[in-house]
Length: 364
Image 1 (spheres, helix red, strand yellow):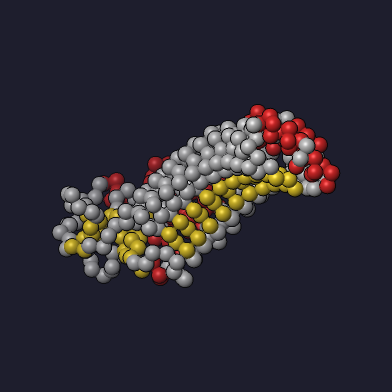
Image 2: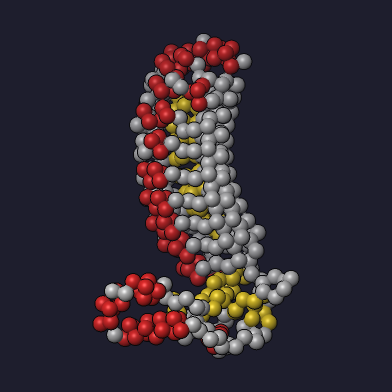
């Protein structure tokens, strides 16, 4: 069928395109496994589609190489195993659709040549990582890499300064990288159906973010910074969120390690006497420890390596307006310095307890 199909195309669609000098050509659903040789004559094409066929890497070359003026190409639903090398010779290429193929790896040399690309659709492939060269796509506005095998996103994603929409749903991601905080134009993140165990607090630095979908993950609570975001849609259903089941607290004041006591005291002294900062900077271990210090939301005191993980429950509608998400209580992660502060009773924070054979519950 492939050989006959190519012959028919040579005397049919391609021939008509050649006569009319059209800049757009579709060979969708034509059951071909190789592009017709006469396609090399259509050097004036700017848009080309050949989705829903049986095209292989070998079936593209060298025919596609001649279409150097292409701005948009759709080769979705074929049998490609890699990024076509001929893309390197298409300087005006802006829209690439390679969804539902068999691509396992992304050639870094090819990626580095895609500096003008604004849409890259790689959904439904077999990709297990994004190489550092992804940083070359600084004009990219939409990245689709859903339904692949990603376990992490590289920090180089922070260089995609034009990115507006990110699709990473249905992968194996365990976290979102801190580099995502650099994406100031990002408005939509779709990260449902992964293995996210927490939501990176730095996502609040994405000041343009309006749609966030992290449903069907493994998240128990959300960072405090969630309340600072201006989301219009927040989808968090099908996560094992900590339920609101309060019980009395029997916890007593803990004995803190000596190192923790020293660090807390030193942190307090530094706040009142900045002259000691020079000494601290000369002691790497002390400097690094103090750099990780947090502040208790009850007493405003510091903590370094020992703290009490708590939650506060807020209504979803208080942070998402208009509400287009599941209603109810959202658990927000809160850090306290001690059981003394937890038991003070001057707040609405809850400690977390996990009795045997039950779901997480809370003690106040």
